[in-house]
Amino acid sequence: MISVLKKLERYWIFVLGMLLVLIVTYAINELEQLSYISDWNTYILSEPIQTEQAQDLLNEWTDKNLVFWSDIKGIKASEPISERTAVVSLVQVKGDLRHLLPMMASISLDDTTGCVIDTALAEALFGSISVTGQTVQINNREYIVRAVIPAPEYTVVIQLPKTGENVVDRLTKQGEDENFLLNLGIEQQSIAFGRTYYELYRIRIFAPIILLFLVFAIYLGKFRRRNSDYPARWTVIFLTQFLLFFGLGLFILYLLPKDLLPGRWSDFQAWQSAMGRWSDKLNIFKNAESTCQGTFFNQYLKSANMLCLTEVISICLLVVHSRRTIIRHLIE
Image (tube, rainbow, N blue to C red; front, top):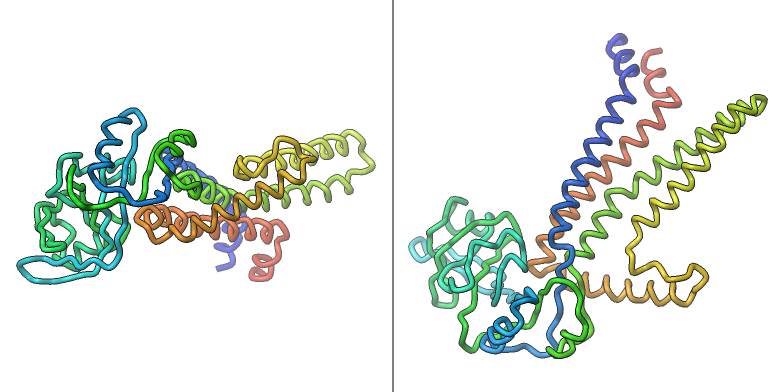
């Protein structure tokens, strides 16, 4: 047992270092996936519009990559043969579903008889997730399952017909264009779902690295004091410590959302205004968490929370190992 612990002590830093590298690599890969939809903004319409009007706007603004949609809660869905039922969120879309969620590309613009459901709903209605081609009944109308997605749970996504009395109350588009939105009658309360989740994910996953910067800087400070009688060593350690703190500052700037940073650091009123905007943004963001987009992006944030916790534990173990307290106690 003692020999095993000695070997573990010898390679402990290497194992923890590799774990941190793997976590950061995985996080960067997740960020790349999020960046695909980080520029898509969702706006609340000042007044719901009918499907026909939405179709006219899609035809007129083909270069704007628009998608209109609504998210209706408490809708009853059933499987006609077994008569199993479930209460779902019905997401009604007019436009390209990839602009709403990237994995919803299974329904074309003209496919008004198909639907996309999630795995939890597939299990509840059919007892299996291999249900492509099966039939789901909603509001006395039957839809053919085109694809099954992992999230959001208990959700049915359908494409609305070009005409009819259905209404939509949300608009998702690529990029920001306030003049265009004003022409459409969009109220000023809006949120860039993808961008906000991208920024929150980045903050959560990389914030523990600040702790790593501080740990290295503190230990370099100890080495600097021990080498005070050696000017050359002291100078090298001091410069390294300075670069660490300088890098820490740049890293914090990287983590902060860009719309939080004022044009001038001395402009305290701009800081206050930016914090107010972000507070309003997070309030809208919180209210929108139950929508299909919010549920989908929350899967990323749950992943970020677990990775963040693992990073913190790994860094704390590195600090403990550097002091050689726990393992030495066990060996002795």
